[in-house]
Image (cartoon, rainbow, N blue to C red; front, side, top):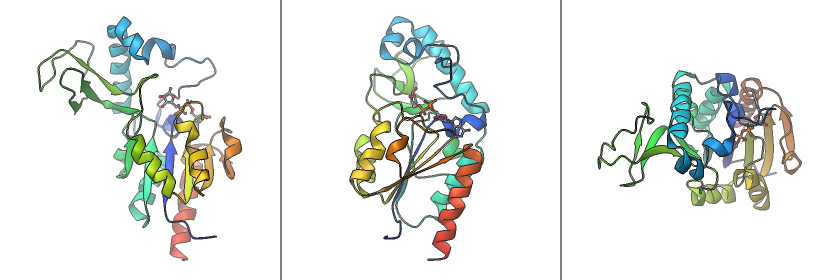
Amino acid sequence: MQPIRNIVILTGAGISAESGLQTFRAADGLWEDHRVEDVATPEAFARDPDLVQAFYDMRREGILAAQPNPAHAALARLDAQWPGELLIVTQNIDDLHERAGARRVLHMHGEGLAAWCTACDSRMPWTGTLRDDPPCPICHAHALRPDIVWFGEMPYRMDEIFAALREADLFVSIGTSGAVYPAAGFVQQARECGAEALELNLERSQGSGWFHESRLGPASAIVPEWVEEMLEGLRSR
Ligand code: APR
C-alpha cells in the first residue's frame, strides 16, 4: 500500500461531548429540550425569531464556557505535524478545534460564535446575544441571525470539501452519527476515489458498514491513540 499523504477528518458532536456540549441525537430525540424543527430551520426562525435567537444565545454561552478536550488537542497536534494535506471538516458550530490550536479547519454547518447580517450579507464574529435584535455594526439594519446552517440550507464550502475528498488517501470520521447528509455521504465519496476509511466513535454509526475499520470508545481516549499511531508512522518512515 502507498504511504498515506492526504487526510480528511470529519468531526461531529461526539468529539465535543466530553467538553460538556450535548450531542444532537440523544435517546429522547431532543436537542437541549427542543425539537430540531422548532429551533434549527429557516421556517422556525421566520415563525418565532425570539425563540430561535434565545436558543442560539444559550448555545453561544455554552461554547464560550467549554474547553477543548484531549481529542481536539490530539487533532491539533496532527495538524501541526502532518506533512501532507490535511483538512478537518467539522459539523460542529463550536470553536474547540481552533482553541486547541488546529489551523486547517472548515466549518460546514457554520459557527456559533458568528453572526450573519441578511441585509448586507456580512459575516462577523459574535460573542454576545442576538435575542435583543441588535443592529448590524456594518449596515445598521436589524437583520442579524446566527451564522449557522439550518436544516434545509446549503452547507458551506462543499466545493473545497469534495476537492479534498477526491485527493484523500485516508478519510476519518470522528464522533458523528452518520445521520445527516451530505456529511454522512463523505465516506462513500472518499472511498470511490480510493481512500481508506476509519471510524472513531462511541458506538457504530449509521454508515458504519462503509468503513474499513471502526474503533469504538470515547473520543478523548481513542483519538489521541490514533494520532500517536499516525505520528509514530511518520517517524519510522
Ligand atoms: N466520543 C466519541 N463519540 C461520541 C461521544 C464520545 N465521548 N459521545 C457521543 N458520541 C457519538 C454518538 O454515539 C453519536 O454517534 O457521537 C455521535 C453524535 O451524533 P449526533 O448527535 O447525531 O451529532 P452529529 O453527527 O454531529 O450531527 C450532525 O446534525 O443536528 C444536526 O447540524 C447538526 O451538525 C449536526 C448534524
